[in-house]
Image (cartoon, rainbow, N blue to C red; front, side):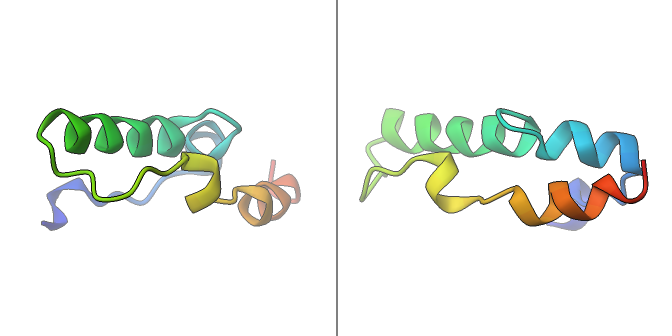
Length: 63
């Protein structure tokens, strides 16, 4: 389970957490996988699950 956990530098954090960035893409891929396998119990939007505003604000001071 922990193989996928990484500590990222500021540049990578910015890329992954930007609007439409890596985490949003990943959430949409999970949604597609669940839907394709008839496991999606309730539809969702990535932007409703993940609010990137706080991390974007925090990263402004370190770039």
